[in-house]
Amino acid sequence: MESSSDELEYVKSRVGSYPNFPKQGILFWDIFSVLADPEASKKLHGLLIRHVRAKTPGVQAFVALESRGFLFGSVLALEFGVPFVPIRKKGKLPGAVYQETYQLEYGTDILEVQKDSITSGQKVVIVDDLIATGGTLEAGCRLVRRCGATVEQCLVIMELTALRGRAQVSADVHSLIQY
Image 1 (cartoon, one colour):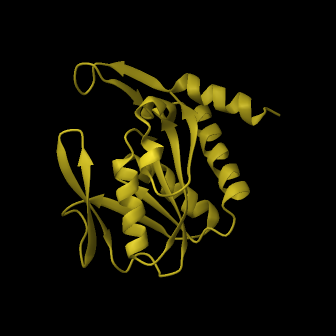
Image 2 (tube, rainbow, N blue to C red):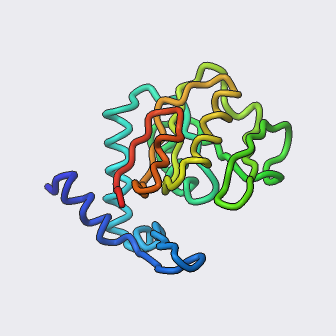
């Protein structure tokens, strides 16, 4: 049986990188290359599931950030038999929503969550593929709290540590891979 460390190294070896995407000077880390490899995808899902079981027992909902977070949050919600809640960009969700504005490198954007999608008092794990500057993840934390729930942890696959994004997030952040 492989160790978690071996599994993590296998997953990390499958993460693609693209220099100068989406613009000059940016190195884009691509989680889709992991998902294209069934063995890497299986190992990644196992690592996520074991982490949640060990560190956030009693989780009552998984909230994921648009759009790559959906790929992991929905699978975790099914595994643990709890609701999956998407946080999307402005105008993508029907019904009454809460909104949070957050900073981008150049300007601002808005995230939304449906008001009735998270129950007050729920213990929530927020899931995304990557944390860079932390603005999107922090906006997600604020939305969850506006619903009356508690952010138990933010769980991301990759972290760009030089950007110090976790310092901007008002909840515990766990990343599997650091660059």
